[in-house]
Image 1: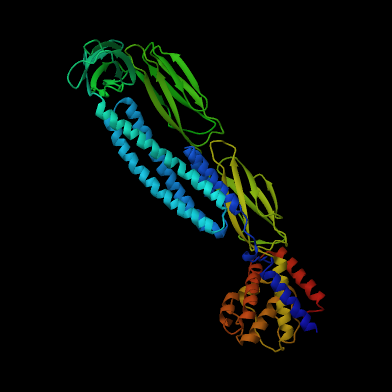
Image 2: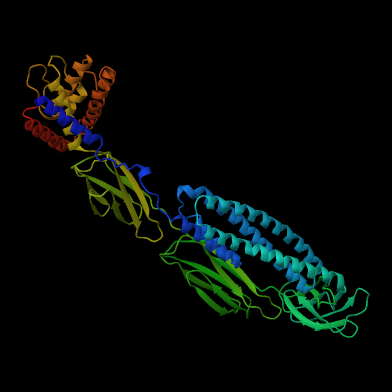
Length: 595
């Protein structure tokens, strides 16, 4: 009875060690799918079709984008994905067709009937593509209808989708007919233009003259002609012979500058445009210089900007972090100190130094860039190689700059930070085999960035490993027949065990604590494998010698425990060993002496 009890305790202990937490399993097929129902999905696409019918292309595309992120039940997923792809292409075709018709109409109003007709040919092709894509959309909607979606909602959606296509096709036919009629009835015109000079000083006036004539060569009187100097537009009217003349002030700091004329159709005469004429504009670049002492700066510091400009120029400075300045230059160097906030983000910032125009002196602009950077501090870390539960360990850092230290680790783990030193203790209730510790080092100097140092420390749960292993050993010894065998422990192990302990074999008294536990493990393996523990063996060498001679069911837990025992034996942590031995003795006493 006693052996059965010990065996049950061993199984429970090893089960708890191998799998401390049970995994809850739920059959996915039993979990109902969550998301909008079929009617809600159909209404979403109905809303899209309403926006498209009103030619609100942007809103329609937004709904399609949002629809791609909506959960769709498995039954409808493939059908809705196909519909969404087709609607996206159909929307693009409608948008392209509308844009081409808008351009063709603008050219018609302008009187450029030939170009308008060419654009209309492209619009016709785009509308044909839209018609084909609409037929694909209809097929996709029929698939949804076959899956049981409400027919009234689907009918309304297809009606909305058809409406913009029909409107654009009607608009195309009407515009095409007007353009063709205008080409047949309107009288062709030509527009000639010339300038008074090919070079002009900034601020002076430029003479522009020309003539608007019909295809027969006769002048067209009383018509408005637009003359453009770069982006500036000026208006004049032709005289009785079709001639026009005007003087334009040249106030652009650009050379050369383009000059041309344009006549917009009035329905009777066709559109005409002159050739481009380029004029050289004479002006002077300002004397403006700006430079930085350094191209990089740390947060919490300042960088210096120096500016020199010609006397009399009005200069403005626009810098990062809200810095602005302006002054009237006397020809000397102006210096500015621009502070960088401690909270400034790393990156490149722009400084603009501009001078205002002054007559023939053009405006000036100098653009500079400064990089805000932070250094990474170097940090040395001293940490233990492993952790035994129930004991306190010290972790320390040595940063290259004065810093503040914060520690983040698993819940329940005790940490205490004092300066650059951390006291850490892992409770026996911690069952993971590794502990992640994050050391967050925040330099007090804003010129340095914070760093996170991650430590992965092995954790040996003293109570769980030793109690479970002790139960296993005592159960195995209780179930196996006694015999005499064995030899002295290997010299390395003798040095690691407590002083004064002598090997006892056979019928002699067995040692308590770690030494007795190790003796019991060696005797068990010797009986099962027939391999004697030679004096020259280390623990790992002996385990290698007996592998394959012991069943896997017993070999794996014994090897796992002996390697953990090795870490404690050779660690020379006397305080920890004493506590472990007290635990073993208490456990053996509870079982009535073990075997």
